[in-house]
Image (cartoon, rainbow, N blue to C red):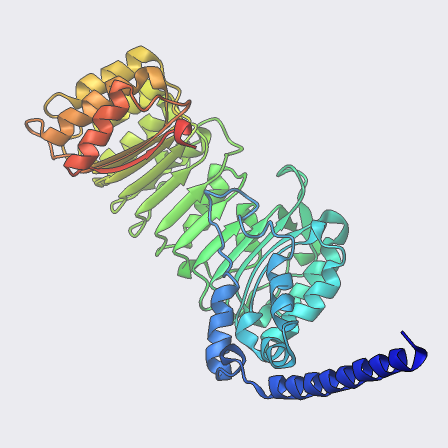
Length: 452
């Protein structure tokens, strides 16, 4: 081809390129004018959707452990909010200006590179809304972190502050405790204690406080918290005398959780009546001994962890003295034989939960035989058993089958929850019978490692 022909083809291509660029520019302008439905929603609706995208925090009160569940967070909630704000300018303005997106915080400060900056950027965006905070504080930064949090104490509503110290004995002092807590409903301090310089601290305003969890009982007295308003109370290591001193100020208390007691020997102390207490939880056999000093006429729900005969006897004596009627009982990591004797003494039980009990075949067989006889747990409606061994499963299922079909002098069992310690073949007699009962109408919740 000649040079002139090549130049002609090149000119034609360049003309086409110019035409395509012009068409591209026009299409981009038209695209910019398109309003996507998701970015054209009213701000109120978009903010409502955002609040459902970002999960709310929960303050645990016992079962999830001292770290408080959602307090052990690496800033995911914070980064999710920033990710939403990075979609477009409109969303950025909306996210950063919507206070309801920022008044709940879950943060684990020991895995965040700069927790102080995160707090300083996060907390002001909540505006004047009540604050729900679950935060884990490392010992080397606790003073500065607590200082930032205390600046917003007038907005505290549900607050759980836990230190990363490994033992209760390695607690950290809080030099200054807020005195004005007008919105506070729940306060949980794990691994902290008040320093000597805070002895004169007085909480002058906390009219809504109803849930309290502290390391020691003396802090509740020293801070002069409004204990008479409490409905839920939890303490760490303490003596019976310290606990009774606090309980004397809690006439409306409904839920009491006691951690391990520092006092093993029985002491002569004055007795105390708690007329509204319906739930008692203990995480150690020693902490159950507090029951010898209490009269609980409305006690209905009991949870015992690591229990033995002495603790169960204290419970039975309290029930006899109080004239209370126990409906639900949860037993964790205790001796199965002791549990069996406890069931015998509590004919009013309607719901029973067993969690990994220390179980030997003769004890389990005795329990199952009793379940099939008249008069044993006559009001029982639901039974949960976590950690059933596969070799004892058939005995358990036989007892369930008898109670579901009806045993004279007992209420029909309507709900069963069971999980097994090790995989059980789906073709074993126990699982086949359980699934058959489920098809017949038994409310069955079964977890088998073999299905995972």
